[in-house]
Image 1 (cartoon, helix red, strand yellow):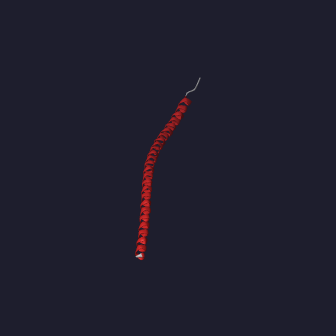
Image 2 (spheres, rainbow, N blue to C red):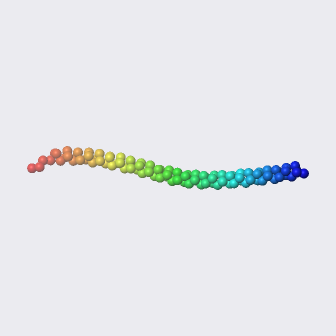
Image 3 (tube, rainbow, N blue to C red):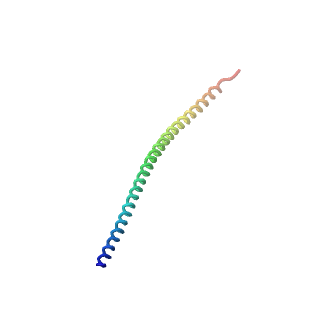
Length: 98
């Protein structure tokens, strides 16, 4: 009888330890799930920020392209002005002041 009681007590102790282990595993799994949710949220925020940065970079690239075009047009206009100035000097050189 004592052996049976001892085995039952051992079984009860093992069942309690198993229950504690299951509780610990469940708690760890819940913590892991919360951590995964936090990571997912952080990734979503980073994705939004990356999209925003990409859009801003695209706008900067467009602005740079427009500035390049405007600079090219300005340089061409300056070249034409220099040519007209040269022609004006040549025309003015034909006249003599009396």
